[in-house]
Image (cartoon, rainbow, N blue to C red; front, side, top):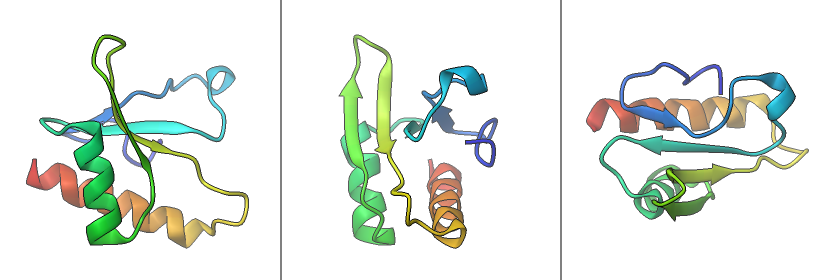
Length: 89
């Protein structure tokens, strides 16, 4: 999350406090529904996430839950995809 936190058009619905984090994150792109963020990540970047559109709870984005076997370079691919999507927003 630190690699995209503070990036224009990126909405992190995950706390920055390490005591409140774990192996799950939710990242949104300004102006996009969570389901749409998830769809673009899958179709364009081949990254599977789950779209979350909990508007009343103020959580709209893609839920990211990396498996223990995910390599750092694969997470870098996710970061690149998020940054590219944010630039297009």
